[in-house]
Structure formats: structure tokens, C-alpha cells
Amino acid sequence: MKMMIPTNQYGRQAALFGLAAAGCYLLMIFVTLAHIETLSGLRPFDMRPGGYSAEQANALLSALGPSGRRYYLMRQIPLDLAYPALMALTLVSLLNWLRLKEVNHRLVQIGIWFSIWAALADYLENVGICLMVLSWPEISANTVLAASVASTVKSGLTTAAVLIVLLGVGFWTFKRIRPYA
Image (cartoon, rainbow, N blue to C red):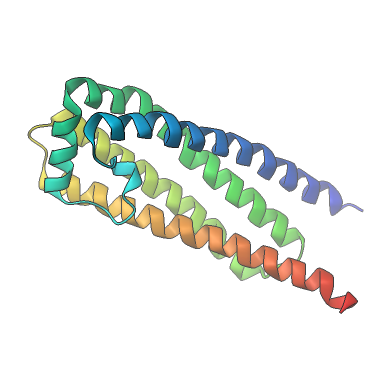
């Protein structure tokens, strides 16, 4: 009976953080990032999981104009400061819930580290975006490269963390239905 209290706690945390993360994500996708794409006619940095070149970064920042660059800094970046932490907290809570359900401890630990590193990579990407916007038109190729690499790493680690959660849920489900098969 004592194990149910932490299990329920992690489940509630995952649900609350997940709802907050989903709300933040939906605001970014349907409001701020959509507006940036409408203003520029180009995909925002945040929507380029494969990264971007210095030419692509310059094209986006030029197309945004002064008001669009200000919008990126004042509207998109604040949301993207909340989202990585909320996503990581959601994934870590789910992984801790799976750990208490006796899913492979090593798999859970890897998923937790991937979740944390994905959030850190997202924050590094945000720093790079801020530096590019603030220094435009004199953006450094190294800044673009660093932000682009952070974007790619963030995408890969987030995907891996989510897949680990799904794999863990699959293992847990299989363990639950196996006695009935």
C-alpha cells in the first residue's frame, strides 16, 4: 500500500506538468511560431529539428524585420523558457512512475538523463537564438552553428526520451496483461 502513494504522486505530477507543457506547446505552435512563420514566410528556428545554416538564419532574421525579431524575443522566447522545463518534468515524472511499476531501472535512468539533457539543449538553442536576434545583421557563423547543433541535439534527445517512455509503457502493459494470456 505504501508504494501506491508515490506512484499516484508521480502520476499526478506527470498529468499536471503534461497539461502545462501541452498548453505552452499549443500556444507556441498555433500562436507565436505561426505568427513568426506568417511574418517571414519561413520556418522559425524552433521548427527546424535538422538545424539550419548561416544563410538560412540570416534569411529568417532579415525577413522578420525589426518588429518580427522583437516579437521573437518578447513572445516566443518567454514561452520557450517555460516549455523545456515543463516537458522534462513531465517525462521525468512519467519515468519515475514507470520505475515504481518495476520497469527496467536502467531504461528509466537513461530516459531521465535524456529528458534533462534535451531541456538543457533547448535552453542552449534559446540562448543562441537570442544572440542571433540581438546581434543581427552581424551574426556570427559560430553562434548559428552552436544554435543549430543545439536544436538538432534537442530534437534527437527529446525523441529518444519520448520513445523510452513509450517503450516503458509497453513493457509495463505487457507485464500486466501477460498473466491473463
